[in-house]
Image 1 (spheres, rainbow, N blue to C red):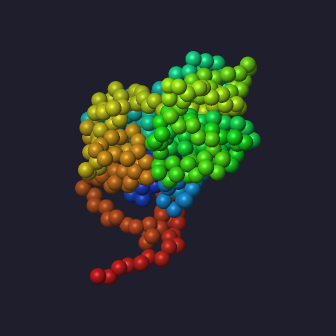
Image 2 (cartoon, one colour):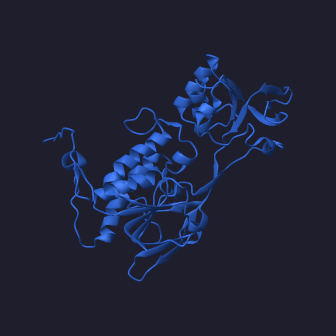
Image 3 (spheres, rainbow, N blue to C red):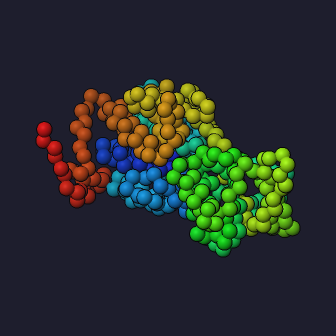
Length: 353
């Protein structure tokens, strides 16, 4: 049986950053993830997708963010159970937990942290009659390696951040990029909407709004999409393409976690955000996209904040009655479990009132 202080379910960015915050408190972490490598969606679905809202990084690829997080937590020597799904949760009489995976691996911890992002997921697919005929032959639901689309014609459908970001990114990679959205207004970040509009004016993106892709054409591989404007009297538009990428988000599922007795609301776990992000089960916390509360923002940045707050309360559960004096890494550096210390190089500025 694997023993640890904090058991983290989910090795995405929020789960990985939890290791760092817990490590500062001298708490040992072990992570479980159904994927074969750390990083969650950032590694599995869009490692080459640029992210723009990570502090100090004007732009960073999702895969590179995972690499930086892995480097950051290395001093704390976390354990990993990868390629296995957390199945059963048992609460012992002493308040600790045993979590067993689908492959029978048992983990014992005083605190369990669910950082599983959206849980298990599958892409939301548009209702196009012959869509499945072209899957892996021109139709894709996620972009892992943008170089595949180098000098190719690409049609993207969707109105959220993923559709906008990839259309903008591929404008400098593909030979031709079209973005199709059924409405005039986009749901993505305002900066991305403005940039996509500017690219459309410059001819770098062909923009189709108030329109939908309704049919696909091709013999063996995809050759064209048929776009139907929403206006009743408008004629369908045939657009030649090598790839059609509908980006309508993911359909999340909590999986076995949903049967653990947690309070669930709209496929997310309710937590006490006024204090510690604890669930209705004492000692079980939920952070990142998997949780919900009034005013919740599903951002990696929010998950980082929740991890930092949660670890302070987890420390009190693991070390009852023991007082912890918070220290800033700018003063004391970062010390791993092996006793090695990485000294802070930043100047510490004290304000005297």
